[in-house]
Length: 129
Image (cartoon, rainbow, N blue to C red; front, side, top):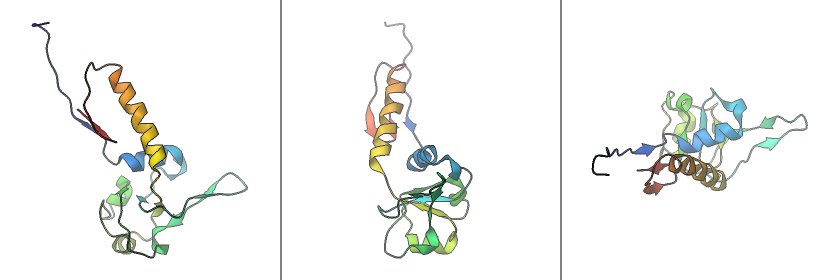
């Protein structure tokens, strides 16, 4: 194996939590979505659609975990206070953090990479080397 070429890749999934939420709620694609807190779960309506909380209705001292690119375009970003973000993007959808879903999709991602890469170093829920 002395002649084998060695390659190292660093994979860090940007906006991972937001991407997982868009898989769970595809009707939110293209909309400003903010992930943060543990409250305000979407409510499934009788017709099968969901009712989502809006950032303008948030009251508290929470911070944003991540946001979709559409929310980022409005000035909203990770670690920003939700009250400040509500001033920038009051109509953004607010979703709670759902770690079980993130762990599930992280495991699927890492299994897919492991199927083609001989060695992987786990660096976090959304990152491997």
